[in-house]
Length: 180
Image 1 (spheres, rainbow, N blue to C red):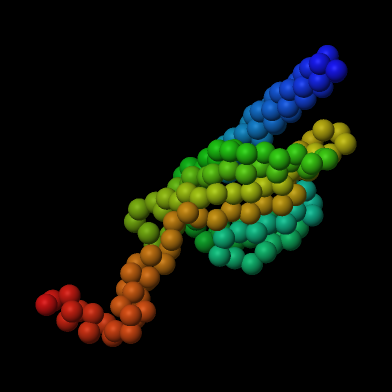
Image 2 (image 1 turned 60 degrees about the vertical axis):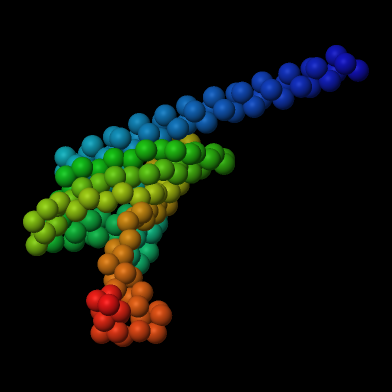
């Protein structure tokens, strides 16, 4: 009985160890892909970027409606480029991966810097993302679903201004209270 228990325990340990190794390798693979596409995006090589997307990709960007299909995502990107937005830098850090069948879920953080028309200084942003990669039968990886959102609060200044209103005070009453 002890021998059976030790054998089962050893098999369980080996299985857990091998799964951890597999996830570590997956994480490296995902980070390599992310780095490759970020480099292509910064250099303006959008054909390389788009080669990593499935035709039926779904994008869920921050502060915008859902975008379905590679052609629609390309158009959105072209519109942003035409408006004068230019990425100075972009990087991701894969923090977690989950594998299920031929799908790999990539969860992580991003940092970016962009030049936006009308702004003297670059706009720097950071946040989190989630990408679902689909692995085709031939071994190629394609982005199936992507979403990201910022960790910065664009309404922080507005919310600070609105705090007195939550307390039922007008702006003038708040200023008077602050002066006393």
